[in-house]
Image 1 (tube, one colour):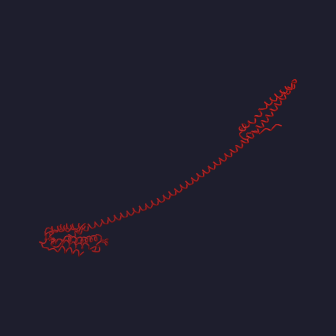
Image 2: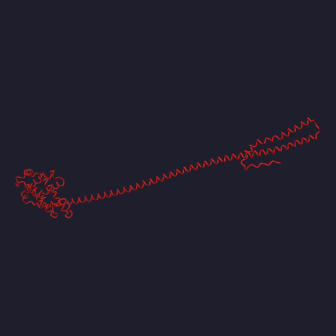
Image 3: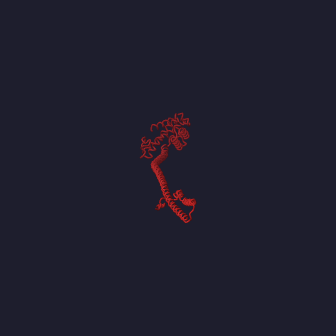
Length: 349
């Protein structure tokens, strides 16, 4: 830092101190005080000032800050005062104590491209401080200017600004850390929720698959049961058909048996009727014979004719009994079952 301060002081002090040498910016340029060179050197000096203020702002916790190794923590104000006095004295002496010349020159230095941003702000602040501290008497400014007072005030302002900057940086850092912590917590929460959701989705999918398997198993059981019911129904139907077929066969057999019984009954009835009619015919024939016996004798031819007529009459009476047998089919149809058929009467001896 001492080398930079000496360079800046030498550069500014290279001007002649005679009044004739100071005619505004032209006087500085004529004596080799190029504004761009001074601006570049001043920006480096301001970095050192800032480091001194930062180190002094918190001597117990600034060991890792930039510039902490350059100066002693407790000696920072003295180091700043010395360097500040050197720079201010060089500017005042270079301007010949002329307040307007110093103002014009500092405005030129602070507008150079080599000094921008925060460095430019501090350059303008230094220029305003110097102009405000200089009086109208150029000689008095050259020989009696109190640089220590100016630098003490400038140090106080510089230190206040640096403390505010450090506080803001710390607050921003804490805010960033808090934001990072919140973001990390949010990300962790989102990751946890995503993991829970994934697990829930997996469990839900597993339950859905289980339900699907159960549904398919139930459907298969229902289908098997339905097929079994159909098979059972088909068996029942086949059994019913077989039973109906057997019943029909038995009915036919029963009807045949009934028909046989009916024929037998009809034959028995016809036989009994024939016997009865024969008896009636015999009785009638006996009566005719008895009448003929009581009558006087007739001619043989007449007797024969009379006998034929009687026989014909007997045959006419007995003939309907022969027609009973064909009607047995009707009787067979009328008899429903074997149990309803009366036993055939025995033939009279």
